[in-house]
Structures are given as C-alpha cells and as structure tokens.
Length: 111
Image 1 (tube, helix red, strand yellow):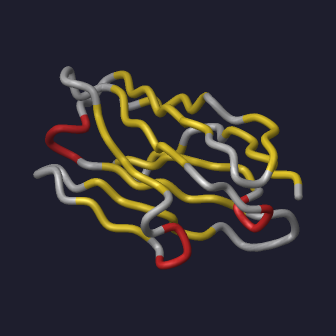
Image 2 (image 1 turned 120 degrees about the vertical axis):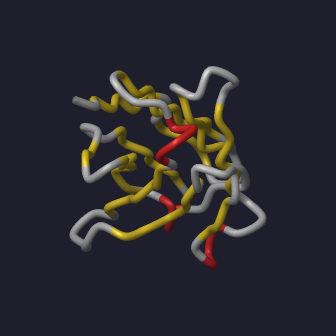
C-alpha cells in the first residue's frame, strides 16, 4: 500500500522560495504520476500541479512560471519548487497518488 509523506513547508516572506518534497513508499512515481494540492485557510482544497507518469507537467494558472515539479532518479520522491511566493500561496500542501493523500505540510507566506 502506498504511503506519502510531505515535508519542506515553513514560513517565508513574500518573494521567497520553498521546496516541498513528497516521499512515497510502496509505489514509484514513474508509473503512476502524482499531483500537488493546497488548501488555503477557510477554503476548499485546490489542485496546484501535476506530474504524469511519462514526465509531462501541468500547473494551475496562478503558479505557472513560479512553481516547478521534478522527481528524483529513483522515482520515489517528487519535489515542488516554489519561487516568488505570494501571500495567496499560503495553505496546507498535499501530494496525492493513486487516490492516497499525504498528511500535508504547512506553507505560510507573509506580506
């Protein structure tokens, strides 16, 4: 059974950067791909970015050009590099694969 663990969240000033990680056990991202979501305070969870099994990426419009997904060579860790962060990026970030969610990591961007 796949398990996902996110890490890398924190508090950063607007314009700063963070790199989130999603570590998988039980399944590789190579065959399954994965997606990142976030849940802003008091709002619904929303899709942020996706990495297909073949390597194609796609991003929600507000993060295009600022966020980037990548994975390591062994296929068990996926990263979300977040640059030029804005207060609107604040939220709990989750990774998801095969219907399984991680526990989330908090990102807070101060103005």
